[in-house]
Image 1 (cartoon, protein in one colour):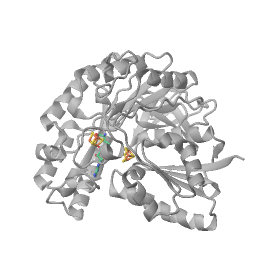
Image 2 (cartoon, rainbow, N blue to C red):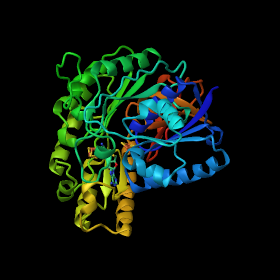
Image 3 (cartoon, rainbow, N blue to C red):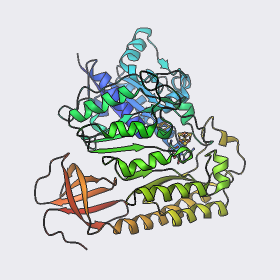
Image 4 (tube, rainbow, N blue to C red):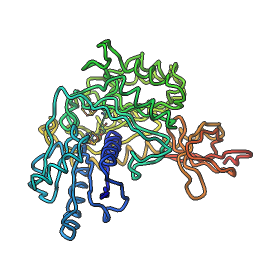
Length: 459
Ligand code: SAH
Ligand code: SF4
Ligand code: F3S
């Protein structure tokens, strides 16, 4: 009998891709997805632990599921991902209604773990992290024509897909849980990546985003080619960019500390590589960067931005910033604001520092009070929004290529090569996945508006 499953995904794109993999493997074991949590026979929470808030959301959802399970005892609950990895056994001690805890290297076997829990009549906790872990081959067997492998809850468009190229992180930034929740850095076999992209593109996918916590170090910690010859990230990009009919290639994320000129040159040389770069800076103060163990200076960061803009003047640059890291003074924060003025990022994701279990910064003195963190965050975000709007306004009147994602009431939600969301008016019907040139008519802080076809009204 077919059982139904519901997946709720928290956190980063890596988790989005992992949820697709779990959905695919459940589909192969006679499960079908439902979008209603109350109808599900199995609920999976694919969790994130990056900040305390993310973890609290998981815990409160688990509290809600406990109530559902009291009324429906046959309901199975699985916690996967980074909180699962971090908490392991503690999670079933606190939450005895959880059936399976699947750490980040165990998401490939959810149906088997559920069967084991059933057999042993108690929770199954699978959280061992191996240093010599090889990322399993998980090639999707479906594409846009039959998108069964991607949970519908995640799908912005079935014409754009994530492909994981590496797992884990060896950088140990002092605030970050990822090296603990995702384990050591492991790069995926080059042929597996190529095959996965190839299958996706042949089935109609037009845009691929390559994923890793620090893609710059792809190929540096384990052999990635079958004959053992080296392959760097720029070399991988070149191989993938050359796959027939792949129209748009993106990647995320890069740590500035080992961003090579060879990679920056790819933005000039690879036509399918989209002019968009997410380069997290975290702070504008060298003293704070040092305490964060980021291993670059602000001078180096600015130099990299100059080189990048030289190779690709139209590149859209975004970043991540943490405010209120332990010991951050008003003067340190002023340097972050000054960086914003000098680099003028197109957009940024900014967060209040959050103490995380097991990280080095937990023990640092001079924690910044909550009100000060909140004040710094809102000052930063206010100025970033102004800069984003100023930068976006420069696009008005220009022609941009967009890919249609979906129809929203009056307009089409599309995405530009720069990664801007563009809301497009069109008298003609546009198909999802269609790539068209539009004229930008209005700019907002976080999106653009455009017209497809004749006589755009520009204001
Ligand atoms: N691998 C990526 C970052 C992944 S985490 C990189 O190195 O850039 C995404 C973002 O979450 C980070 O860039 C950082 O800005 C933020 N973050 C991570 N840990 C945090 C913490 N303890 N408190 C607040 N923000 C944090
Ligand atoms: Fe975390 Fe730093 Fe690794 Fe990024 S590079 S995942 S911030 S430890
Ligand atoms: Fe969160 Fe884990 Fe991603 S902690 S940001 S889901 S790697």
